[in-house]
Image (tube, rainbow over all chains, first blue to last red; front, side, top):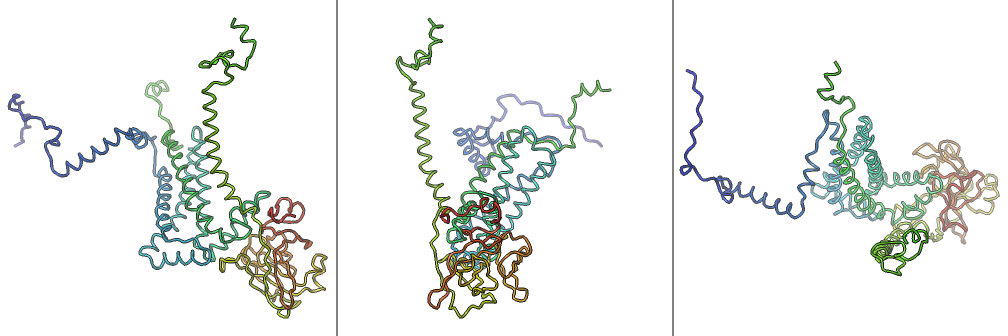
Length: 270
Length: 220
């Protein structure tokens, strides 16, 4: 026999109704979980009341994206996470690294790799992550190019992206010397000399990079300072500008998506 | 009369009808304060930026000290073959500051260039002038051969194959009593004419010496 639908209960007269929960009672449920939730809300509200950051966060996080947005659009974020991974592992590698050309640098790298707990893993992440970042940068650039996402009004973001690409390559170049083994030494000599083949300013550029006429005592610390202080700061600042423009201008639809006409225009076409 | 006032451009602010100006002022206080604040900011920024910049580019203009290093006695070297010798170019940084020099005694039948006549020993740098890899003297072939990109040089260090743009660099040599001493490096063009030291990849023939200027401290 089919069950009859249950009828809603008739409203109780006012005096017999349960009073609504007071705010301090936490929706009547209570418990430590509810308390923790309330504490979090209170903290966020306290900060937001003094900074109005929630508006900026909402502007950044809850954007409209065009139809057809696909996995290729994640390459930029992937590059940024590769950079963050490089930054974090780099900071911890800097705790062990000594930029001494007389053998100290190589010895400190050897110590990290062989003796420090998880040292080989963290150094491996930094070393292989560098290649991953370069590959991702080029894939992101290719996505932007082939989807035509560099066109008006996003030209400035393309320019910033090219600067970020150059800075990433500079990071690769300066980081390559730091292990100070044979490969690092000769690769840097070749790299500096390639810079030197530029007419007129080339010789000065070589001297600037080496910190003198030969690869000497200051070259390694120079490369180290450029690698871990100068370029990361520029990279972080320019990634901020890059992201701001992405949020400000929005992303593009893939080129194969045709814009849909409004309903009234579609009827007249027939 | 406003139309009369417009024709006559006075330097005084009141006459030019700048609001907020007192009579007789040639510049408003606001403009003066803005300019002062900008100037003070520029001076403050320049006072740390300029020294930092000079600090960074200083090594370009740093003067190299001339070092002479004893590499052996006269009887260790002969006229017909190169002896590889390790030379310290940058002291104090261990292996990284060393380079190999190929040395042989001056041979009157080969070293006929006028620039070589007064050199007692020929000391050839092992830095390939393509991109700076270390070349190796191969006895059987009588050639210097670079492992990186296939540069080949003859007995005098002149390029015979591959990408090198000028002959191998050389070092000044002198005899001090029994000892052979090796001094600063110099570069040569295809006629083995001497030039102040250049980096690899920088040609010295034709306009090359002007396209690739030497270090400021090396100029006379």
